[in-house]
Image (cartoon, rainbow, N blue to C red; front, side):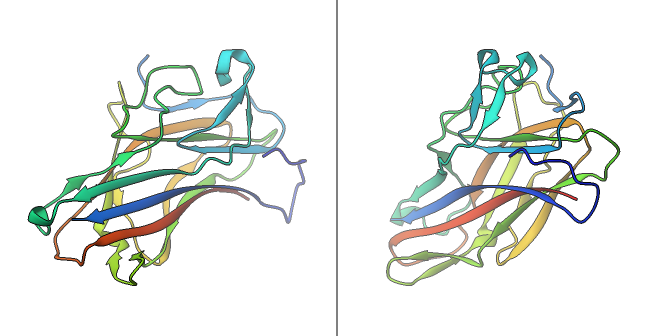
Length: 215
């Protein structure tokens, strides 16, 4: 997560992943300034680790690596196939912001996504992206297009979503947010399945990767 500062020809990158499964049959805005310091990135999708400071970054907590891969899923009964959008739920239990312990997300409906970009001097913005495969695939080899999965961005007390709401572009990387230097950002994402087609019975799985990169 923390790398030595080098003035040129170097990039910071940190990645978190989320799995997706379909079965057929204080006032937060929230972007806040943080102090300049050692050049570093932190990205949390679902579960994360914050040591010390009472688990609060604004009280001196130090972020660490967390290998947990959370998931979102939905089961569509046979009688409801193709009948319209279904909300997905997550196995993530994260409700509070690691920045200040504000109760920000609602589970099991929302997944926490947040982090920071820190640098000791002037620098270009960091970029948050997400990469999804073209399709979700069942054990039998049947597929559902990944662009049938969308998200609504929000958070308790968040009048303007930090990460815009959107839809996955299957088979491609899409930019979600430009992160200014020395800022913390976060949103809570509610995922939905379009459920606009008839598909064979089975469990369809796919994995998306969220990446925060700084020049």
